[in-house]
Length: 54
Image (tube, rainbow, N blue to C red):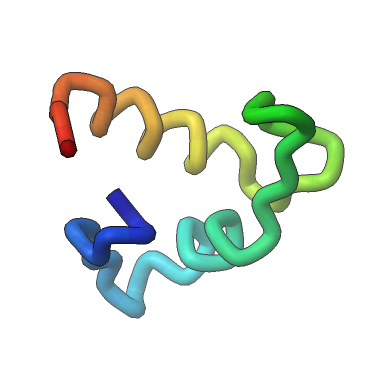
């Protein structure tokens, strides 16, 4: 979603933007110790789960 620019995040959601900028993954698994505001990122991922993008 992000790579294909289907997702837009308003500037007022600065913590979510920070989370997206600091995300760290190990073999497609989120490294929560290295990611800021990982709970916000989890919420975003859950909300996008129902969309099928090809």
